[in-house]
Length: 389
Length: 117
View (tube, rainbow over the protein chains, first blue to last red):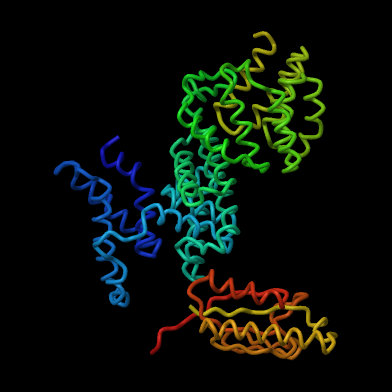
């Protein structure tokens, strides 16, 4: 990776957020940042990398934005209001959060919110976002363009909501942040997951006494702490088989502190408590499965979600055995017809009951539905184990 | 920015409302106008006659075609609007929420402001 590519990876997101907040224009911010990276590509290899690459890029992008605005004559009179050389009073964190709330505004559709957040707060490119959501680049580009237009035309503000509006707006932001995290985690894009953690941390700094925000941050940190142990040689490693010394201890400790302060009986709170039970088991066989099964039962009562029921069945398999787990799995195939974890869980139960042929059949069904090659390989491997091969 | 707060409601209930109900609604609108005046946000607005008195005009091949009635047929009908000046969509929505305590549905629509000349 070249130095410019490295700087691009590291600084693109925050710089884009700062520029959008300063320039009050999504398009101008994108163009100016592109100009700045083009300038870096031309200059850094010959002249050397500046001592503070991010500051250099921001300065160049600001100048290019001024140049571009000058060309648009009608806007020239606003120039002095838009760009100032002095550091502005609101912090970069406020910029990111203001932009986050704008991108998650309830006047926008759910899909638009996620796409805008990934583009302008996390700084992903349109092709990257399209790949993450398995849609074509042109579909994603059109969605983002429409959403940008709505923000501009409808006058959605690029700043934090008033204190009176905040409580109503925060849950929508949580939903987008958690989706950002789970999409990054699911697809092994650690930098996307890390960005979601960073933004949630900013939100927690803004609202330190909000229990849901603390629970969400704890949940993300607990899952994120296992990122280095989840794969070995490109293969998926189950929680039980992960090398726990590779889990990030400081992230786990931070999450436990957050949960000690506040553990609400809410979806994020209960999920965080479950993740904490896993994180605090020294060895896989020390896992407190009965406690986890109870937490899942509470979570199912709160959410009524079939996905939660599936997870509960897995915990019950460990605490009460395959027969009790199979009872919980009944009917889930109809509710979650495309979820590969349902046949996989059934296969694990059948394997414990000694029915290897039936288990292999369900592992194959799961492999066909699995979204990634890593998971397909893993499931076919389990089927092989089951038939003794 | 200017926003139009378009008020949709079921016309039949208004037509069948008794005097006391109407008084209450008018009083609520009076208080809402007062709020807008206090915030220097009022830019106009009228109550509209029933939707069956509306005429819709659309141009096809350069010719204006007139049809009897409002454009969109739904259970609720456009009954009036306020024109407000708001800092941004959040403030416009704040006004709309106030208004939604008396009217069924409010559509918030930014007003296109054409440059003078």
